[in-house]
Length: 201
Image 1 (cartoon, rainbow, N blue to C red):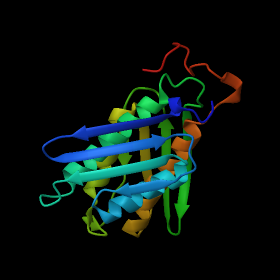
Image 2: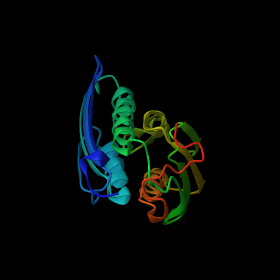
Image 3: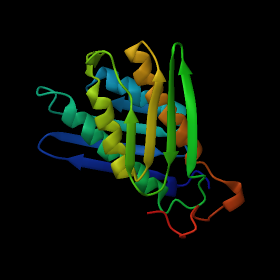
Image 4: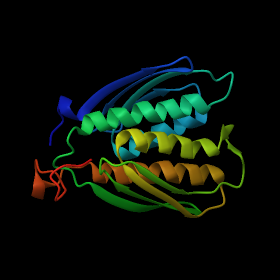
């Protein structure tokens, strides 16, 4: 699998609440250009790009005068659809990956199956309702929207941690590193779909 247009995708979504445009390259180098109007969310998406090595360009214009929910959820939808489109039939990928990621006092695990079947298990608790002015409940909303539209099974478990910024950041970094490994080419099954069914869905 090489850096070709089949591993790139552009996807847009326009509703009465948000306008989201995203372009990704799964075989990138972790370059990002992200502007959602939500500072801490941008920071987390930058971590996702940098540590997955997926180039991500996102522009989001949402109804932030209400709250951040619609912008966060719709960004997850658009990013998920772009990843699914870029993966195409998912042939030749490793499919599975997991990592325990440490950041200072915090340890978080992410396990991924790029299965075509969306499912999220989210075992992450925050001690405060906000971090960096961002509602902590929206982290789950983002990942739920992302996996639902990317066709990915994702389990995220925060083993322990004290600092809410660190907990959030380890979630995004762990998902990024697991996603990077799961979508990489497996040279032992180049061009083959990693399933006895012959398809991933």
